[in-house]
Length: 201
Image (cartoon, rainbow, N blue to C red; front, side, top):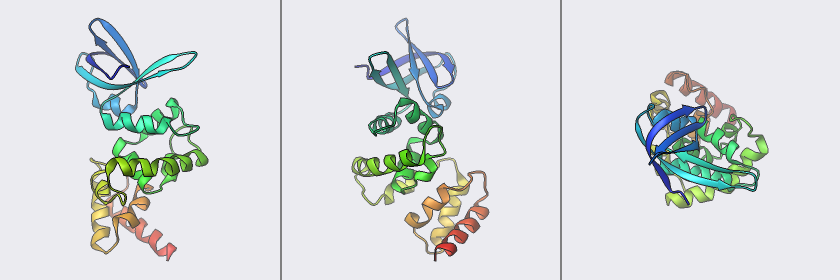
């Protein structure tokens, strides 16, 4: 089994990275997230890999970090979720954000990825929530929520902080915040979340 490939990046295409190791180019199917992180053609890169062998094909999948690889492997363990669907989800969500979406029972966000229907999204949440909780050693997800928000989404972070100051818990507001347009300002996120809370009470 190929654990990883380490060498020069010689090609980048849509959902594909080719890494040359000892004169051999390894074509790794991957996510847009990994493609954005591994640098430019000619850079030295390392991809953590998963080898999928079927009757009609053998495919190598590569990821910029072990967390994304593990999420890919968990996704493909779910009935009805193949490599293509797993890549689609992890192209739209970082590994941290995916974990938080599952933790929050936010199957709606998963349906935004190409090829993921409502029933499939619900099955992913149902089958993976306990697995992710076990791996993180935290069944209530409080520590994960602290770190799994968009690392570069200051508006979302600000909105969550402000809502917590108002007395709301992360567990209560995070599913609502994750469903909002990430282009919204923190003020608009707060207003919309408060409206949703009001409608539920």
